[in-house]
Length: 274
Image 1 (cartoon, rainbow, N blue to C red):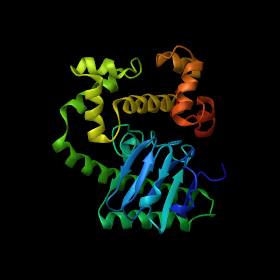
Image 2: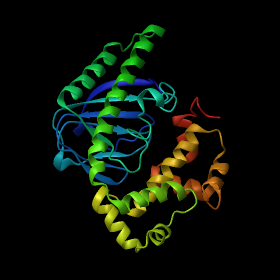
Image 3: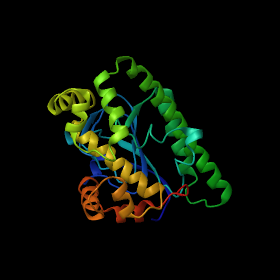
Image 4: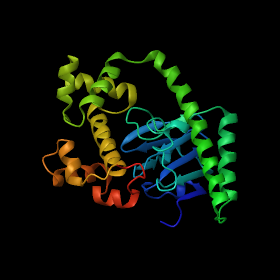
């Protein structure tokens, strides 16, 4: 990995294959765009910042593709640990690593321009490597994350006014039980509905089926275990109620495109790991 943080300008049409990297990534999209993350379709209607955790798979849809240049900021977990800085910017579980929220955040034009200016500031320091410049770069990055976390929190507060009770209950149960139960029927039974009815409701509200949401939550927890702990893959598989580490590895690779061993090698073990 040549750079732990970088800023670049790209044309979306040059992304001939899905974006799938070991970095935390932020795309600044100035116009409405349709994109797919881990198999789920999203549409934006205004300028947004799009947030990806390591090895989430992103595809842009050609029929609704921004023609100009977009800004991409990416950083490795070894450079800036979002778990370690959760008190300052509160982005972990808000901007990154949340199976229930859309990956993008809309913001006022003034905030979008400010975030863009901060990425310019990071770009201006490229190639200057000393401890003072690194401190400045990390300050710029932290401010970007804080501004976007604030915008996302405001967006969630508005959406909460129309929160669906069944979906909220499903999310609560899934958070509690996903490490032991991966069957939609289990959750539907607790909620007093059929798996089909639950899936239709979830799909209508957040664009994912109930099965997708369960899978996303399981993979999210697996990634956190691989990145934030020093547990062996076998120990993680046992804790997450897989029959053995080989079944866990196949499940993980089917949904992420790489093995748990490869994921850990590329993303690394966080400095907060115990």
